[in-house]
Length: 456
Image 1 (cartoon, rainbow, N blue to C red):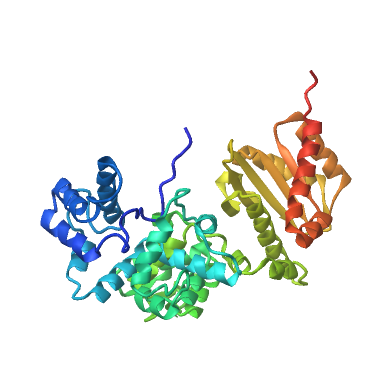
Image 2 (image 1 turned 180 degrees about the vertical axis):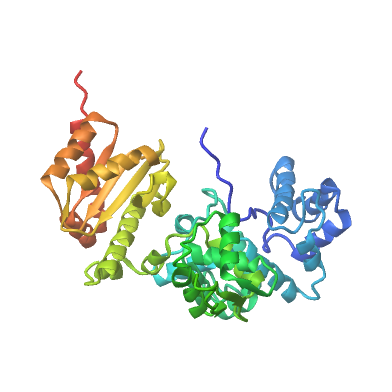
């Protein structure tokens, strides 16, 4: 059976400000806490008894309200109020009530990811709807079921607190007030490397005080399994975090000729542990930091960056372009710059999956070079063993060499792999008319079919 992924956004059907009164249902939980059937019946009597549907469905609607309150962390499974529920119960007015829930959503339920995703889509000039949102949230490691209304319910609750004004328009002043971090600050955290984020998260879990940098590094490695380069820790982690304003550094002195002592680390006023830790937790599945600015840009700007004289900028723009290509094919983003045990130490630019009719995994390599060689294709073929890929896509701004094509043909003839080779000419065609991607992939599919033809 296919794996059923747990939703990263809370279930919210029938737990919506358009259907229930938050203060009233919290009052029901206070009255009936510990007796979920009595609580559910109270909700049924108040909100769903007269709905024009069957009695079974009316009872299910009441049950959905209970499940939504549980998913948002307001009650436990027996309808007892949680600490959050008690805090909401004590709010003196509705404005404070909605603001308290909104802060919880933003910090603890991937709310900042949700809002930042919407801001990025606005910046890229994309139309925002549930289908597009699900695809873009997947790129941020945030899953919710197909057809689920999870983002809509979350937006409604955030709208009650003023985070959204109309539709998907974000009030960034209210966002910063409630979350403790602006959209720019959250985006800056997303731009930190995994090592930098892990270092901050470890520091956030410690009581306030001063610590030796090597102590935090060891604790971070043991707790989160992230390996640090001890010799380059200052350059790769400490200096960037200090320049970002999160920590202060006090340089150690020479220790009997055996080298410098570790830095003494102290959090700054900008570093608020109960804000930083949950925000970093939301970013752990995010796309590689270097690519984030490119995915906020419209496609024409990405194409322009592909002509940059800066080799790094040009390479990142090509990766962002490839991600947009795979979006056009309605593939599901899995990972960027995948490297480690999963790939035997080699790096793969982008991984996509498709569950249309049958499952397939697409392994994408972007080559910002004048020529793709046999060795380039052979490397990708070797990685399919680790990644269980069905399709290899090699995209180059240059040309695909003759030997590389011959090798790809041989592999396709002798195995179940499909290898798609897209060169600079194809890229120009797709830029001129995005719909031509169908022609490009159709051409490659027909070529594979000929190679794999069965003699009957």
